[in-house]
Amino acid sequence: MQTEVVFMDEAHIDEAVLAEAGRWIKQGELVAFPTETVYGLGGDALRADSSRKIYAAKNRPGDNPLIIHIAKWEDIYHICRDIPETAGKLAEAFWPGPLTMILKKQDIVPLETTGGMETVAVRLPGHAVARAFIEAAGGYVAAPSANVSGRPSPTLAKYVLEDMEGKIPLIIDGGPVGIGVESTIVDLTEEVPMILRPGFITREMLESVVGRVAEDRTMTEVLKDVAPKAPGMKYRHYAPKGNLTIVTGPGERVVDYINSACREAAARGKRTGVLCTVETMAQYRADSVKCVGTRADESTVAQGLYQMLRECDDEGLEVLFAESFPTEGIGQAIMNRLLKAAGHQVIQL
Ligand code: AMP
Ligand code: MG
Image (cartoon, rainbow, N blue to C red):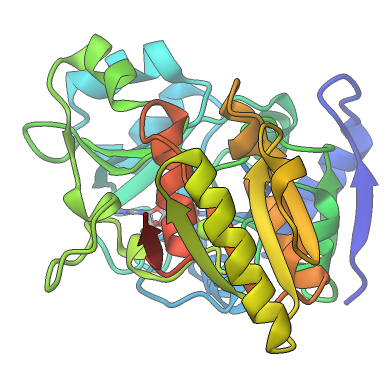
């Protein structure tokens, strides 16, 4: 299959391209599209065969459910039931935007889309191209991140092409995404809402709207014998091909440690890389020193993280070190993804 890449950003909505994208989805094919978090791989959420195609294209484990993307609030009633008042409040505060809610599903949603679960994940994205595409596609688009499972989520269309070329007919290129890490997932099927995956919308932001919010403890800790409540969170996502270690401690010592570990790895013939920030990048010595963003504005780190992990692969780096980040605000999402990328390999100085 030929994969066509068409550029369309929020300022240039092209009805002809949207119509083509909509036709592909209605034929049961998949289309990749930009959202404000990462690129999505979309299929008709109400068709079991489309969802199966998504799993196949991503090589995604069948028990890892998909998020259904809608373009307007009312559509939630078609796919969810017993919708609590908290859902409406959260939607009013954060939709369109990077928040996914878990609710009870209606029978119309195939179990293929929900990975066999009786609940369903729903999001109304903040990206105008995403919403226009969802409308053109019939209103219900199942879309996980548009990467092959295990690779970092794509933040640029060229990375979608890298992973999906020949498997899907169309990629809508909306330029670089804004946020760079996946949506916050909050489970509303229990009495107290629970965050299953941290993202741009933080616990504090949710609590300011609905009161107490719990967190799935497996998000930032590795708990033996406790499975994460979001099935996808148990997999070693976002992993670069090289062996990544996070180094945490006082700034100076982190730099010294990483530099000497890189010297030692280089002596063993390994290609080395460092993931760091504007503030420290001049101090590192490695084959490749990657600046992920600035600590003065951690949203830049979220934005740059996946691209830098992909570049490490492109450059064939084998031994990688990353600085760590405080787990407040967006920092919690950054550390959650970084810990997964590192397979929880952390050195505390
Ligand atoms: P992705 O679309 O690649 O960001 O992955 C979707 C994430 O949402 C995965 O971590 C899933 O496990 C999670 N998810 C989707 N549906 C549900 C659900 N019904 N219950 C819990 N987690 C879900
Ligand atoms: Mg994903």
